[in-house]
Structure formats: structure tokens, C-alpha cells
Image 1 (cartoon, rainbow, N blue to C red):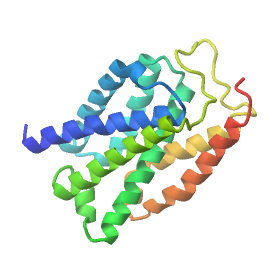
Image 2 (image 1 turned 30 degrees about the vertical axis):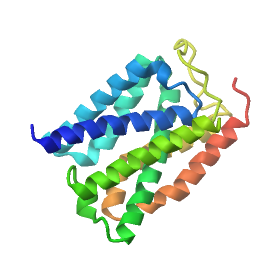
Image 3 (image 1 turned 90 degrees about the vertical axis):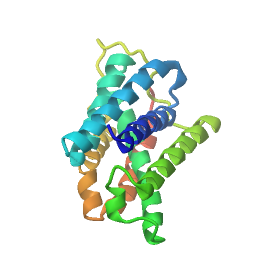
Image 4 (image 1 turned 45 degrees about the horizontal axis):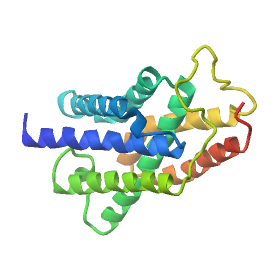
Length: 221
């Protein structure tokens, strides 16, 4: 294994941790309480991402595969129902991508980064984008925690799996549609970046967060 591969795996672990941190804090979920499960999930994500990008050369599917692993981990390790797990992770990934694209845009405009560097797995420019994103996401998660912000309509796990989430109920119908859109957006993320249409994430994220805010105004039950 090359040094660059090792650096990629280490950064991927911190990257996955940042996604989980922002995902949990957006919904006022305890983070350190599940540190063992979160660290295990992050290590698995990092290894799978390395396999996707370096060994199998399928980077366009990496984020989709990560999304599946995140959701399965939250359900199996943290005992969170599938709908809530998916909602939390999709929301966190949308915030992560919004931050990353903003940094990417600034670096592109200033000439400090090009597309080849952004889509690579090693190199100084790639590391600048990656580390800047990770730090910015950690800072955002900390601000949500410090200022006691976030949505509070998801019950703290463990969830009772025998009680199914009312996904298509009147309270969740609009949110469920927004969630489907979020999943599609994440799955085609690589295509959007390739065609330089990634800025569409911002109007979509605004609509998605409007759905979350609407749901937060309704009763929990």
C-alpha cells in the first residue's frame, strides 16, 4: 500500500466521522454516546470507499454505496428505524455536499483548484479541498450543538422496530417526497459534478430544508 493510499483511508475516516457528526447534530442526536458504533462505521466507510475508488475504479458509485452503508449502520448498530436513518443521513450528506461545493467553487474561481484535482484521491489540491471540507463540516456540527439548533421531531434511539414509521402519513408525505429527491440527488452527485451543474444543490437543499421545517412544526406522533 502506498503512502497516498494510507492518507486516503485516514482522511476518509475523518470524512465519514464529519458526515455522521453533522447528521446527528442536525437532529439534536447524541454523538459521543454512540462513539464505538460511529468509529466502526467510519472505518468501514473508509475501506469501502478506498475499494470503490482505487481498486474497482467506480468512484461514480461511491457516495451511493456510502449512503447505503450509513443507513444500514444506523439501523443495525444504533437501532434506528430505516426511514429515520435515511432521513438523517441524507440531510447530513446534503449539508456536507453544500459545504464542499461552496469551497470547491471558491477554489475554482480563485484558480487554486481544477476539476482533475477535485475528482482525484491524492495530491496537494485534493487534500486542500478535502481537509477544508472536513473542518468546515465539523465546525458546522459544533455550531449546531453549541447554539442548540436542529430538528427535534425524531425520537432518540433505540427505536421499537415493531412500530413502523408512518412514511406516507399526512405529516410525513411531503417530507418523504423530499427525501426521495435527496436520495436521487446524492446518487447522481458525480454526474452533476462532471457536467459542472453541482450548484443546483442549493435550491434543492432550500426546498428540502423547508420540508424538514414544515415537519418540525407538526406534533411528533
